[in-house]
Length: 474
Image (cartoon, rainbow, N blue to C red; front, side, top):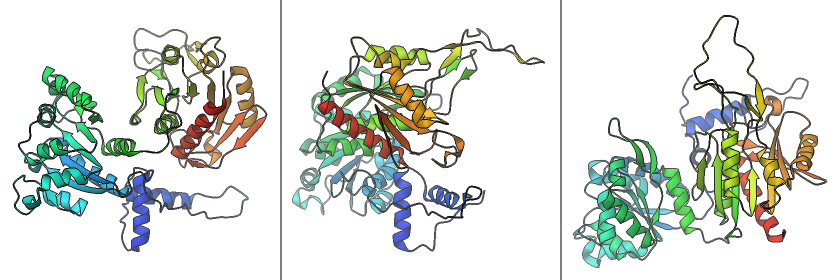
């Protein structure tokens, strides 16, 4: 496929494209391809040819929480320091002013020149700099920040913070700080699990230091894996927004269970029955509920997307695993069942891989999986005050959703058309795509919502939960 070069655009259009791409976590080239693809989509047979230009977002990326906020980013000396270049961009496109302090070790991985180019500000590296310290610059840096972010927070930096050491600019600023501090640890798994690091983590948490990550995965060192990878820039940006978010929290004190993603039903040790669910909608709902202050417990099938920030994760594989996990989490104030749970599973799982042979294999007998929504919606003693189900349909959308509502004891059913010719979500449709168009079905009412991004759908559902929990009594 030929590449697309973004040039010869007027500055306003180019900036709008950049913001739209950033909001969708895509490159400008990828965003342009999606726009051109939508323009080239043929009209249905017999329909007049109508060209609808996809809207280019001009609004600020993110929730607006970081507009004019002053973030001091302290960059530690680890291989993950390169991620800070993207983190700076993510914070600035959300409206934040970013200043940076770099340790000497950080300068071994990225340069002050690169950091300064992205922040459009001075990069501070030396505690005894004559120009910056004539007015006690380390105190000024600490006082002028609304939030201090340490990324990557190495084992050395965490130890200095925990024990009150102040022998360089970074540690001195942290000692002088009165603003909240958020750290993104990054180190080898053995270092993360070391008793000294565990003690330092407990000390820092007790001091009110916020943590984001680390994540599990492959390390820079060959053959090393485990917890120790620095959180991704978008995760850190979301954690920064959460720390500085002083909006009303209508769901504070409420507990919500959310299910998300597909389930995998094993045929043999290698193969399984699954579906096309990506988990994007369920994960977005969990994130939106957390933003409103809820304690969110997200039970997720196998997905490849990032965990939402501020959410308790429970990972499962099969429908039976998900059923058991949900019931262990009861009671709760609300439960939202967005997962695409397999209705059936193989009646028996082969102990060995089924070998290919001429004439095919015998039919795989299927048996019904437990109905998670119905088991909670009709629970005698632990039914949440609000139960919301999802219905993925390819025909008779509202009729099927109404039947599901009555049959399974839900208060609402979120019905969405997942057929390939629905025209929703671009190539691949709703399942796996970024957009959705739903019909909210309750007793005697079917409210059709316009097509929108899945994060917007999630925000509306979270607002509905907050409204209903305010009025619904047991």
